[in-house]
Image (tube, rainbow, N blue to C red):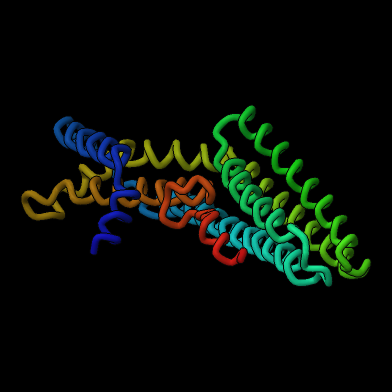
Length: 258
């Protein structure tokens, strides 16, 4: 129940209440002034619901792709650590400790990159990430000194290459999102539609029992703004605001580095 309430609070916020109040006022004024009209119901689906649902589906697909790329990054990072621990014939080395520390730092940097709010912060963290990729690559070159064969070193280099590709995929997902024009179009209609439809809601007053006249504008406002809030929470899967966001937990991964 607590989880349901928390989720409900994420999609019902001040914007929902503001649009609902405006829709009720618009309906009341239209009824008081005798402004009524029979607008087609299908206009809501064509103009708003379809674009918003499309945006939600697109954002969810991006989130699923981001999860796969994060899994690739984490899995290959752990594989590099296991290689540093198990593949050397000479166990008298500190390769596992260096690899463990570097992987932890890279996961922390990845989290900071994907949560960056400004371009300057983004550029700083991105440069730091590539510096750490370089350190990880140089670390693998030390494997040869402790009995790791060239073919196995080449395989570890492929792991690092796949980590870089996974990071770049997540970077692109973070930077390039749902088309801005589509989002702007959806928001304009979502926040104005319940108000513009005041004459239509006023025309239905006689269809409802007393005290239920404002059910339609309230429902329209709650449904449309809630859909927009859902889309906003899915838009950035890395900001750790919505309950469906991707959480990069460094300590959770660190438990496998032993």
